[in-house]
Image (cartoon, rainbow, N blue to C red):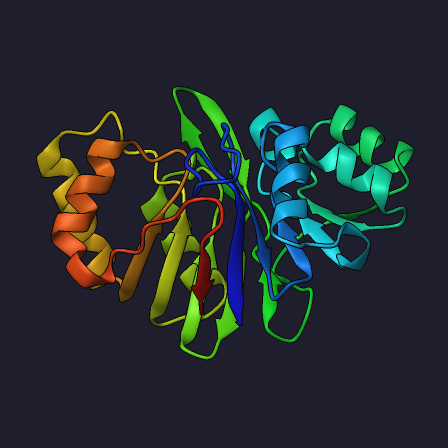
Length: 236
């Protein structure tokens, strides 16, 4: 089982970067679709990813930097399953249907394949705003891993909710945005200590995680810090 990173704020030479995130799990499930459709499709072409061979798309949030490339993907494969949260906007839902996608509203933990599962919406409140996002749980050869979007609901809240909801003890790897840029160094260190105590073995911060946060994670997690950028292939 592996994750191929298709789109991120950073990219290997020869690939395009941009705001947002997208990755491919097991060569058939697309998670998020980045913010720039042209960049996503270009990277998919360069990484030899065939859109007609995709089986499903999972969208963590209906914000533009997670959905920008979805519309082009749907144009190129009619009938593609799109897993979304019921609270996503009506505009998003209507666009999926109008482009021929099969909209699947995830009410709770849902299996896409034997080893790939959608968590269902994770709720949090930030500045009086209710936030909903969903993530993927992947049962790989090395253990259970979590792939999330921005972590607007808070990375610790996301992990804690998923572990309880899906009866998970330890996590081999967490890949995704961490949203800790406004935190002080001591607070970030405390978050890292909490992640370790929650049984998270490896960390792979992505697009919404600033460089200063990455440096702190790298220093604390040492060899268990996994750099992530478009073009990377990560074994799970």
